[in-house]
Image 1 (spheres, rainbow, N blue to C red):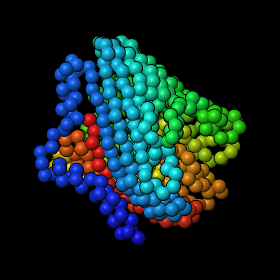
Image 2 (image 1 turned 45 degrees about the horizontal axis):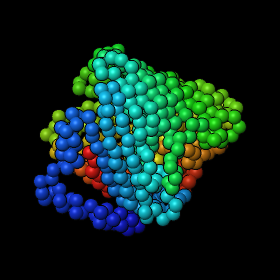
Image 3 (image 1 turned 135 degrees about the vertical axis):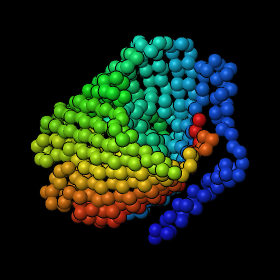
Image 4 (image 1 turned 90 degrees about the vertical axis):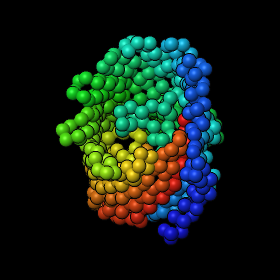
Length: 439
């Protein structure tokens, strides 16, 4: 069976990409998009640029939802076309359309896979000419703050995520202080996408580059509000405050570190909410004949010990979780321990091989296992199914040349005690091949 779905996926990818591989590997390929932008920049004083992306990704999943859902095989296509104009020395105008297709999904594709041509970005940015001063952004924008753990763009999704936002900031040579309000745009595959202001995030997100030696510190205070029209289920509404910070920088021995911690209080409907999460990671490049990048990290997000009495499940806000809990993108930063490693071998400058490992446990056995979007996958209400969720082994490779990126990967999820007791316990496999061109 594995050979069957793998062969079909690879053959589908080959039909789409063979001619591109041949052209790139057999001839000198110039980046036409970059050449066009260079020409536009020369003729507009560097004020006008175009953006473009075309991506295809045939993929296949077996043991989908650990055996609870049918296997899935389908190609995904995404096209983006945009432009950016610096109309004056203090005003930037940016716009981009996005078209996402899943023609062989087999049933009605979800909004994460399909959305006919729509407005992905359209914003105005007012900025200071100097390194200090006020600035503001108004409109629709793809936003990623920090490492995207709480506010980000899950770009691996075929439709990604974008926000309708208002942002005002003040910039100093060593700091940027910002207040913002944003609302994730609701994807409507056959209609114009619209904001859902009943589900919004507002607060402050500030960045400092000189508080620690050679490092960066970010501090944020955010309020997440959600009512019933915005998607909240149950009596009352959601109102959660998140106070957190992130720091990155170098360590001795050529190591680099990244840490992030967030604590929460507020209300989930009629009950009190108290949650917290933290992340810590280290990385280092080993200067071998073929350079090797090593990363190791640990993540934790709290869960509810007494569901229905007190909500202790960490609210991951608008997280972008791709790769952070495994390449198959099954889980999110809620009620979870995760131990992760990533090793990247640079064969040549454009070619990289990656090997990733994840091991997961529930923080609270009485709380649910949550998906990357934050939704409940499965729950053991009495907490007797165990804590160990499972493990994932991933391998994937990328090749980049002249604006093109080619890649392929395979993930195998080994169901642990918790999944074997709460689902059919089938090991999930994920195979994909992709290519993209962007400028």
